[in-house]
Image 1 (cartoon, rainbow, N blue to C red):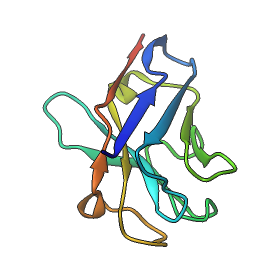
Image 2: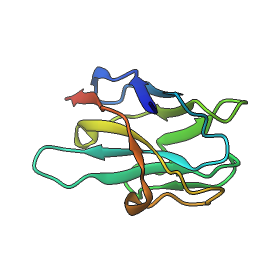
Image 3: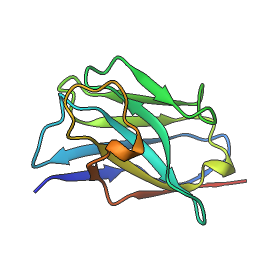
Image 4: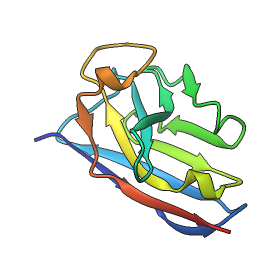
Length: 125
């Protein structure tokens, strides 16, 4: 069974930092794009940052550009999201995601085949 296991969420003050991790089990994703999405209360789930299969092509939501960085480990499996200068509007449940499509350079939400259970990020004033 394929699972995506997230960790690293929590409560932080505005201006602080958090680092999210996503470790797959039951499958390796070194040939697949992965990414992070988030969903705030009452809002639709949206893309935050995605990384292609090679770890070189990134896409960021405009609201997080310059503050968040997505990366993969050398094996290309575990994915990280470094979040700096956090703002209250970043408060949401963050989900790790992966596609079964091979060697894509993007990860739109319609291509997501695997979701993690989500980790809560809360940014206070």
